[in-house]
Length: 522
Image (cartoon, rainbow, N blue to C red; front, side):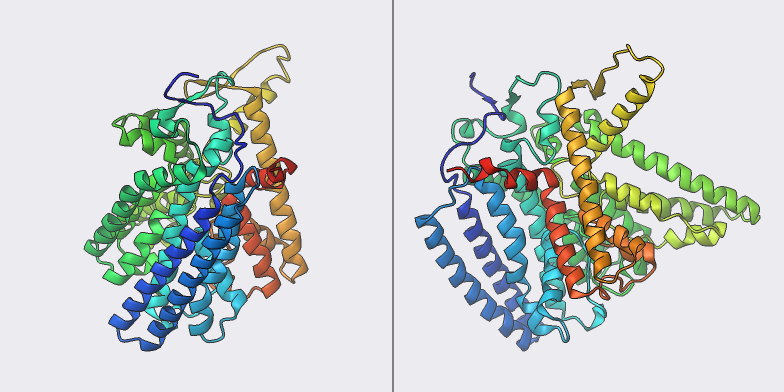
């Protein structure tokens, strides 16, 4: 193999790829976060909260040290230990970071706290906190910090774990055109890791490459929101949520309560890059800025948003004609902006709500059909990004293949290759897309059935399942019109949805790969 090229199809067969070390690193990161929250609570005069976080700091540090010693002596020997470590992080991590919530929030049980923090680490944004005003600021900040950390972990995992295994969106990109041709290293790793592809080394490289831009986006978003009129504390919390596409609300009424298009514009400048695949950003960091214009997923996002906005605005325009309110051009522009913001917010699976969303209804006297937002959340953002959903490239390829099959009904012998940008998509790639979509639909069905068994009606169960598996937590409260939709769930339903959050963030193909017998071979 020539230097500078990575063969991503050769399976990783090394014993103990070192991924077990990442678990202890995550716990040490939690202990640092606990310590910072203890300092924050002490600075604002909340001694009780500071004491709880201080105890969690010590406990997390001791637990992390013990786990590191155990795993170094008995490393994970599974062939895909990186996937196993990631599942353990998403399953056990929320239990650790949820301790302050269970201790400090009245009436908040361990299941409620676990649901809240699982939603944060998986960047889902589904909250079961009823009265946000009664929650200490340190708890709100801790939840936002965990959401930001979860988004960063998902990006690092994309490069360190998913890319070598050709899953998580890379399975489509890696088999375009010529399946046996290796992918050039510039899309995956630097020269130093060509012969050393252990998970830990890749994770260290990914963290170094992504750390500064990721933190820089948080700072810029916070400053932009504060300059646009948001309070400094809320601006910081929303900055973590925007970069990780987590739609947590930290004030009554959320983003819409500000009534500021400047705030919403700042959020758009953050959530759109966050929903673009990390492989595209890596090429841009190397100076190829035209990649944003050339990338198929960027074009698919633009087309999807444009079509949905055009359809919805045309519908409201027709309604305004019937109510003789078309001369209210300012209301029309507000309706257009609200529709545009919501379309982008939900295709990126962030789930922030615009102040002008309800203004469109007031202008035309027609309610905007929520099913359009459900469809956008299902499609989701780019592969290997903080966004959830099926992913744009998979949805686009599935749509193209469906059109080809319809065309073949009248021209059975016609050969029409499917292309993604300038690349031809192979049958192997389409087979993987079909498998993923089938598994996604199956997951929605099973999750909905489990929720109905807990007493939830079928419609809400389906919307809740889509919301969770697409990592778009604000979807159910928006569609149902009940801001406490997650609060009213039974504990059994919350446990089901926590499993769905993890599956949605890991993606079904990764879960299947983890369940494969090959994974457990030493």
